[in-house]
Image 1 (tube, each protein chain N blue to C red):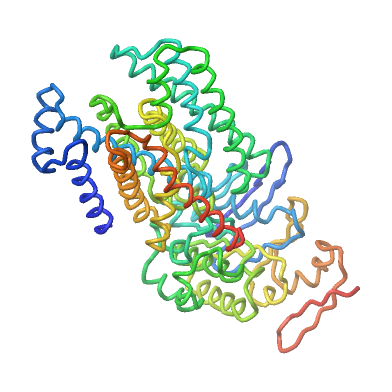
Image 2 (cartoon, chains in turn orange, blue; image 1 turned 45 degrees about the horizontal axis):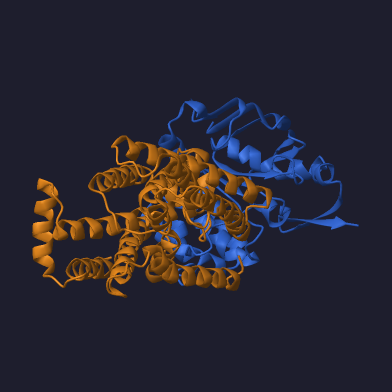
Length: 325
Length: 241
């Protein structure tokens, strides 16, 4: 925990100092915060907002991934792999091509709501297909791939037919933190805190969801309800990130997987906090690389995050097979 | 009486699994026997408050359905048979994931069931017998008044079967009520004070081991002929072809 937090801090400050110009991270932090509080966004304010966004989105995705893994008792679950992100992507893509990139404050709500509905529909579709296919780890992943591919392809259609704001639409759908927003950040932090409160309250039954529904019932909780609420919260968090920053895959899979591997435990009390920090770290580093790898060019953060995360999925698959699941 | 069950009925999707089961238990060990699908697991889950039922279940004269979850967990623990778990969970995670366990007791049980060297090992890499021992340790460490063990003997080897049964006998003498659902009549029959035999969701026999054999109940429930061997008060049932 201490190690991962300290690496996150160093990544955080490196992120602040590097960019088009190299700056002193501490002064960027202080003047950035001043700018954010007083309004009027300068370079410093932008950098602070962007790195905070990476941290919070990473945390939210890792959190969502972990909750989905618990509720499906499947270490391969993740909002991207189960199709939730693509469902949200499709819904928002459709709305944006119809409405355009309107900057009305109401649009935050509209984008969020459509993303959530899209994500939820995709998640339910995945669960439906997987349960028909025996609900094994592999069938769940394959069902997610089927549903995810469908919605991802569908999300390209509106882009193809409607040329308005096409560049913005494409840049957004590829996943990037180029245009962070303070109000979205606040919304995300609220959502994260709400989920944290809920999870803290039900941490023991949630932990037992990994073992057997009977143990959950013995602790006085209905396992079906516990699953429903935690996946609902996970879908909400994921949809919120997709609505603004596009699809960022594999963080939800990689962070919990690495933290379980490092801690050699799957106790929620240890694994969840470390996963959340690792998720933040993964996206902070990915976003840092996305802006400094090629000077003056922003690579979509999803490209880098997926290049780190996808090998972890491959590893997890191999391990599952090795341990005969 | 510690446990009073009367006219207990349970249905799953319009199929009646238990059809009016009644019995009472004091302190001691009770074996719940019966062919596959007779309703043994359902009975144990119902008296542990894990599923909906009709009829009445009273523990120490309190109605089970009126108890809060925490109070219920202190009175009765259901120990499930082998379960599907998250593949990379460790044995230690499994037995520690319960806020209601008595830590001191847990340490003794880890020693008794020889799990100390396995605590770090992942559940996907332990044998079914080792997983079963971990579940038993987790359940016993709750230290509740009634312990309902579902098929505890099916996966563990003969030595651990005897360790478990001997220990349960000690616990029953200390005042616990123990229910064991199992079909391993040997060695189970030699450790029980009472036998509840189920067939198609009904109790066809309740009583002690001697009467169980006298009334020819084993043959009635399993449709197999048995030869009874009695040696130094130790009963062994051998199925005859």
